[in-house]
Image 1 (cartoon, rainbow, N blue to C red):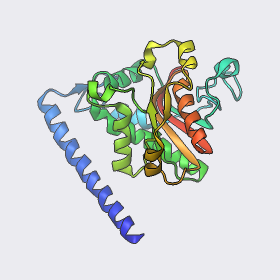
Image 2: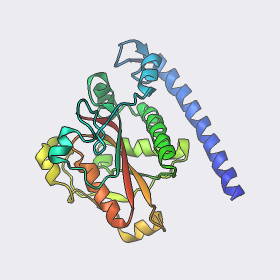
Image 3: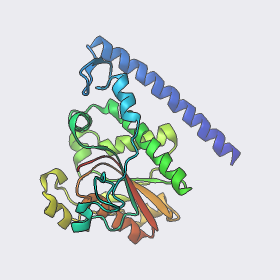
Image 4: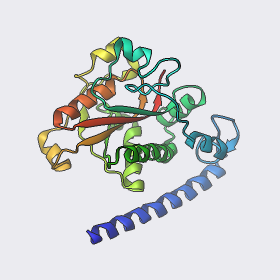
Amino acid sequence: MLKREINFAFTNYFFMFYFALLSFVQNFLSCLLGGEKCLCCSKRTLRIPLCRKCLLELSNFKFIKTCSRCGRQLISEIGLCSVCRENSALQSLDGVCSLYDYQLWKKSLLFAWKMENKRNLSVYFAWLFYRKLRSLEDELGVSLPVVPVPPRAGKIRERGWDQIDDLCYYLSKGWGVRILPLLERVSRTQQKKLDRNQRVESIGTSYRLRKEKALRRIIPKVPDCLVLADDVLTTGSTLESCARELKALGVKKVFSITLFIVD
């Protein structure tokens, strides 16, 4: 046990040094090339499109009343929002946490990360995700492994990377979070090309558990609680599909953390 803790500490310090060195090199190169522009206030920045002030603002979570099922902000409702009362796709999740509303400059920030391939944002999103994960762990009193929502087949081959894969890499290497890649995606259709009804109809057909041999290698024993990681919650169909598969595997409680939520 002591040897394992020493190895973990050494690995953790190694990656802290690695991140610091990488950050210095990236900042230096970015400075030579003219830097970036803050997506919020338009000030000149270094290697990420956020100035220090706006980054601090982003890291200050505001605790507001949210829907107990989907995590959307409640205005006049109590307990459940109007969307979940009428037709909620989220039935298998035991809790949903989203950090920010998907609007204004935060929407531009996500677009820069996903579509403009600004991968230097991955470590900052991982840091924000980790803070929320630790808060949830403290609330529940348990350690929570993270299950990434897998990309569609061929995405990494086409674009060279996947944002959730990047996020989980930094969670694992930088903060020692246990990452469990238990799922695989079946559908090749991009979710953004589907309307709400089509997304809801896709529940149960878009994702599945990995083959039994792979599952036994990843998790000899099924955890009681897990957290799903994704970037945006829109209708909830993706998280619902994944949660159903995990519940079928024997997981008792499935929570989710997403960076953004579409109201």
